[in-house]
Length: 175
Image 1 (cartoon, rainbow, N blue to C red):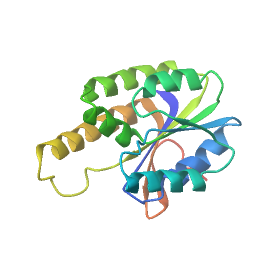
Image 2: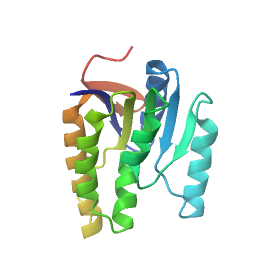
Image 3: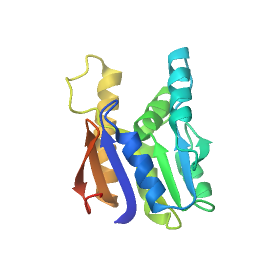
């Protein structure tokens, strides 16, 4: 089990704000590793809002596909890394035709080897709603559920955020 952290929550649950505050507490040289891609105007606006609202102590890095490579390089110069978000990364992989399940397995294998920085992984919990009506959405939901289980197993802390309130599922409660 690693000292890394998994933060789950629904859309607009407050998970990113919680993860940002946690990352700033655990490191003096935090990095914000964003996985979003600006594929349309609405997403460009969302990314701009995230950038504008992000605490200025974060160094920024955008990497939509090579998350593992970016983490390994970033851990050389940063002691705390916020990944926002694993679900978007998996979506990017699916959209680019990559083997997302294999990439998740590689991430799960790589995280315990990264010991020079604590990593806070943010991801959307998508398995609490209705069964999606199309195969791609069901594939994504199933991939995300399996990924979250594997990440929760190896992370030392797991938190679930609802309505801005964090619930500790694993590890010590956050003050």
